[in-house]
Length: 418
Ligand code: PA5
Image (cartoon, rainbow, N blue to C red; front, side):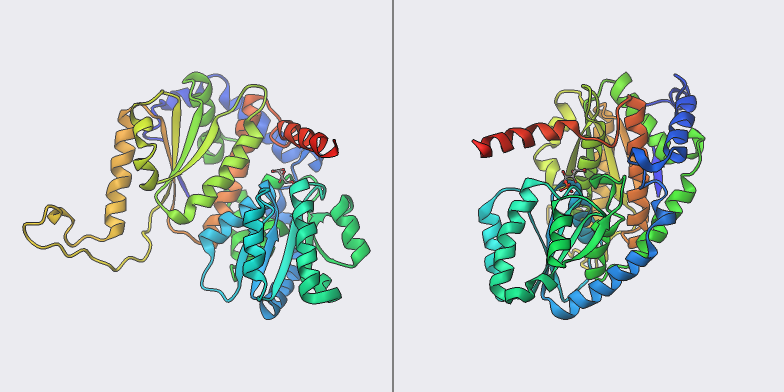
């Protein structure tokens, strides 16, 4: 993974002003050396993840593949976005289909999914750390009825709850009904939990190597376990975002990619950053975009609209396998495309977009990986989690709570109790 700040519009010496190095040393100390009780369990997770549980995950994944046509995951926010991102990036041809429910309160969508699944063999994985989220419990209520209808009392063998080790309604139900459980570790918030059972069960079911994902995360842990700003790209990216936001008064960070497969990774990043940073009137609003699609919808604004934007590109250097060479006859207005493939066009679009947006005054960071694979996914997840925690702490906000999310939940509950 490489971080390129050549087009960031920020001079190298700005990184070393305003005591950033000193602040980063303090932040690194907080992240690395406090007890885990402050929501920090993800920091050492690549080293101390529960190996026994990961073996159980592999076993469950094998069993699910042998007995099911589909895995239905019920989760919202941090309890599904990371899994969806990894599945979209890494899934290979597989015999099992993975679907999501509980991601909103749209019965048309849920009803259509259950209708689609009615003649298939299904396993359900309900993911909720708190075990109290209304969207999840309501969806589970409906899905339980669906599963009981299909499998009578045996349906319980087709349910897996991923939740807190001890507390919450979901845990209580699992104990009461003898349902298989996996654990969302203590002190690991939803948006920092993709490398736990929350993401690992779906990945293993899809035939994705969870071992290689963890190898990437371990490498990131080792590479980024350093408090020197100059040598730690996660901290450098955090300081870059802080400068862009506070000194250059940007309000929005676009996360732009030219790979469709990266779209859900952008959605995971949006949640990671918005829920971690967006407090006390501070934070960059993160908006994921997929190019060139979105260049034809919001490109105009980026180029000439309100100057509130910064942009981070996630670039995959090795193009996807692309054997379709264009063959354009002489005299055609698109003759300049002759002998090129779609990846060549995408590369030209990428370089052109960076140039155009940079000329328009948009600060640009480029984060590149050589290719899309399990190792790089694990690496990127850890890189962004660390960088996000650091940039939140630079803003002086707590990266691990989400008090603002509670507001709508309590109003919704009040409305339902009327
Ligand atoms: O990142 C977070 O902590 C949140 O987005 C939660 O994941 C989300 O609200 C769902 O909560 P729970 O897993 O408790 O159902």
